[in-house]
Amino acid sequence: MSIPRRVLVIGGGASGSAITILLRRAGIAVDLIEARPDWNATTGSGITLQGNALRVLRELGVWEQVEASGFAYGSLGVTAPDGTLLFVKEDMRTGGEDLPATLGLRRPQLQQILIDAVRATGADVRLGTTAETLEQDADGVSVRFGDGTEGRYDLVVAADGVGSATRAAIGISETPEPVGMAIWRAPAPRPEGVTRTDLTFGGPAYIAGYTPTGGDTIYAYVVEANRDRKSIDPATYADEMRRLAERYGGAWPEISKHITDPAQVNYTGFDRLLVEGSWHRGRVVLIGDAAHCCPPTFAQGAAMSLEDASVLAELLTGGRDWDGELLQAYYERRIPRVRTVVEASVQLCRWQLDGVHDADVPGLIGRTMTVVKELP
Ligand SMILES: Cc1cc2nc3c(=O)[nH]c(=O)nc-3n(C[C@H](O)[C@H](O)[C@H](O)COP(=O)(O)OP(=O)(O)OC[C@H]3O[C@@H](n4cnc5c(N)ncnc54)[C@H](O)[C@@H]3O)c2cc1C
Image 1 (tube, rainbow, N blue to C red):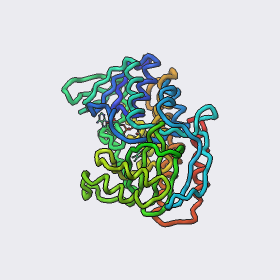
Image 2: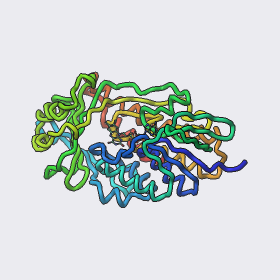
Image 3: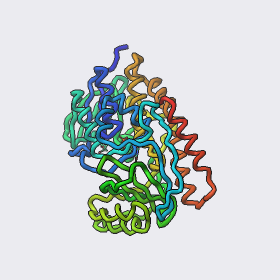
Image 4: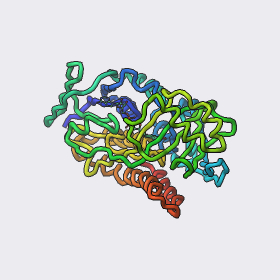
């Protein structure tokens, strides 16, 4: 049987960019289509990357850029609402001893690093483009794009995120479910002395925290009960977030002063999704948030998405036939680890929503991070 050689990647986020880079490195032709004309290069405040995410970024060849742009650290502080430091916990180095435990980075910066790396591979990138129809037969997938053009592929990788249109198009009916919480996020200048993530559980909101994303920047976040998004006027986003943030002490008064521009404030609900059984139909396979997503309580969503790309690329470039057996092997390898992360991330939310005060949070964190420390 001849080895298929042409892949369509739908979506240019972390997972789509990662698999494009890895497949191109193996000499496979890749077309990447991305719905957003700006390729998401200017949106978002910050992201927290654990060691296991950094391990994949190193595999992609972008670790030096990530390290130079971000802010690495190795512990987590827990504070009372008034800012009193309650305790500091060392973060586990889930990517191995030669990588930091954690690194904060501005989201647009991460996206730009991945965009540059994808461009350097020579992949055929088309922005502002979606796949309108996918028709499969025994040998491949025929794709009609939004602009009327067509392509023929041996494999389609659906990396189009939590709202994946491709997932629905191939008949996978699972959809994301709200967890009952939502998060306000905003970038701000880094107050002197903020050198790691500090979290407060309780107070006016469920969680308030901040993470350095570079020498001069942080992103701050406040988690509250989910509200009907439509009931909140985007023009009031900064006021809404500041109203919650102003009631915390410590570094918060300084941070709150900079939460003034509603366009810089993002409000997002927490969702849970775990597609069960398999992540492919024929020659179309899901990776990243298209297959699974979780609240960011463990900051593992992008890490799991990057790992999907790494594992799938390893299998696709390992000399095996690209058949259902290989795609099922990809699912079987990923599902126990991803399930652990999704369930633990949701569990942390449930304990807070249910007001459980004696939950074994350190135990859950320890068990989960021990799993993700293993190679994927
Ligand atoms: C509030 C919040 C905070 C988070 N914080 C963290 C964190 O700190 N650390 C962490 O590791 N993870 C975090 N995550 C999770 C992380 O953002 C995701 O897991 C990760 O972005 C998933 O990457 P992806 O490439 O699979 O999907 P996405 O990043 O969503 O990328 C999908 C891409 O596909 C494009 N697209 C969509 N539809 C189409 C289409 N039909 N055709 C073509 N292109 C399309 C989109 O424009 C986008 O560029 C957080 C998530 C949320 C909601």
